[in-house]
Length: 244
Image 1 (cartoon, rainbow, N blue to C red):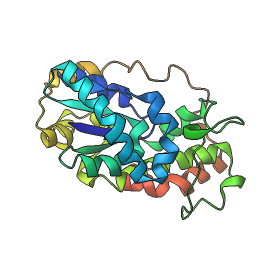
Image 2 (image 1 turned 180 degrees about the vertical axis):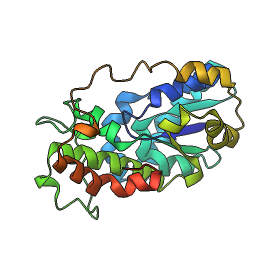
Image 3 (image 1 turned 90 degrees about the vertical axis):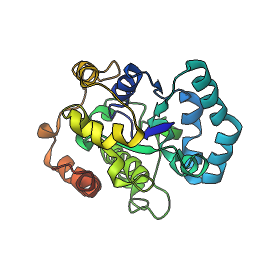
């Protein structure tokens, strides 16, 4: 059993499809509703999250895995990114991975989803910095764009704190370099995905990918937005190996 965590709009659907083709019982956000409505509570309280897994989520995993008959079970699931401490505590032998995408692409995609940081947004669609976060005191003065930038930063930083660096995966590398996918992911879990299967999956667009964008690409961002992105996301981008 292994889990791949990350932020939304990062290519998790594609990776789930890749594992599925390899015969893994692979699921993309299988308990979406339950995980989303509890997201904010569980990033604040790990013990509550452990109880959620003991009473409900682990049973869901066991049911799906048993029904599948597969040797491997996997969730590629951004909605449980804040469950990382609970999963590590309850399943210490189940590897966790971070699956990241260049923040500029994620911000561009999320900006087109109006339910994030809109006037009526709630819960998982309006997460805000907790006390101690460097942007906590600035939050009410930040623009929607800046809040979306912060969400990418915070999502990845949280998972990075609970996943060793050798298990950080980048979408851009995974879809371009089979050897890196094998070395950083497959070898760590003892799974074989033939290169022909990898090539077939990564060569076609994910069914969850954005068809059109309502927000422009990085090159067209105004100077002020570029400055804000670098200020908020620059350090995290550098940790993940992205160049701005």
